[in-house]
Length: 138
Figure 1 (cartoon, rainbow, N blue to C red):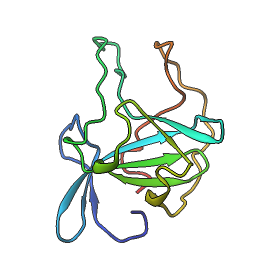
Figure 2 (figure 1 turned 120 degrees about the vertical axis):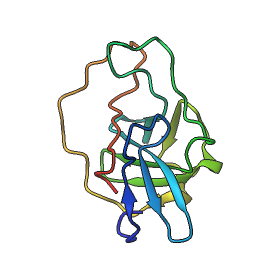
Figure 3 (figure 1 turned 30 degrees about the vertical axis):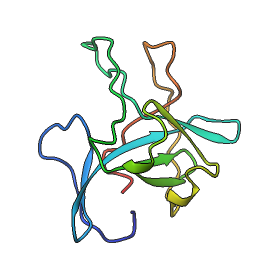
Figure 4 (figure 1 turned 90 degrees about the vertical axis):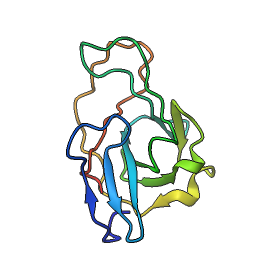
């Protein structure tokens, strides 16, 4: 999407199901945004579910649901990016990017994610550094 010239908007109020709205000319689409810096076995392991994020977390996991967004935009550590339609989501908890399965949805490379201190996680099953870019990468 980046560089295509489409207007992109953040919802005015909190949206639990998507981070951005884009005007593609003929329609508005809802976009969930994820970033990832976990690279292993020559692939990017992207966590797409949400496991809380604050101290009031009740232990429930919010899965990626194709009914609640139209696209998933992912930026990974080296700047590679994907714009995946909800009709092609392969997992509700995580995706492995960088291989042939999602190759057709890879878009132009952007800037790498700046090195940052590792995130602290209360979950022993956390899979790397996953943060919502919330519009900065588009």
